[in-house]
Length: 200
Image (cartoon, rainbow, N blue to C red; front, side):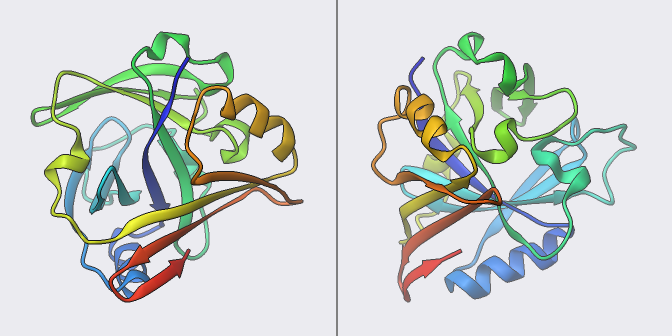
């Protein structure tokens, strides 16, 4: 199974707060994304060239929804922060069992499948990426205005960093992604932006 980095997600309890936090940090303006009725969320977006960044949060004005939400958002608390990384594949049927079950989604002319554990959690507490397969549609990154920012590095911090590095590196060839041993799982990304280098 081959993977490629697709996008990064800043998670928040409130989309407005999360978007404002990201805009202050990066010195850039995100654009409105849309709603994900299946998971009761909505997002804002930023184009980063080959990938994109989203801020995602529960949608209080969406249709009545019975959880769990994806990206572990039902258990998310605290300030906005980088909460998930998503990798694309051309054959999601090969996703490992721990990644979850493929779910088909559409929004407008976008169509994709994404693998989500039944309880909405993140595989390996976020140490393993969420997997996505885009259908016959133009990738979102190519539809977004180019912000001028680029991902410089993505750090995956985890108790089992060495094992995850072996597992993921066999599928993902991207020198921007590195694994670091840490007592607490966390993600950190460094971006080259028009105002300089920023680490979230």
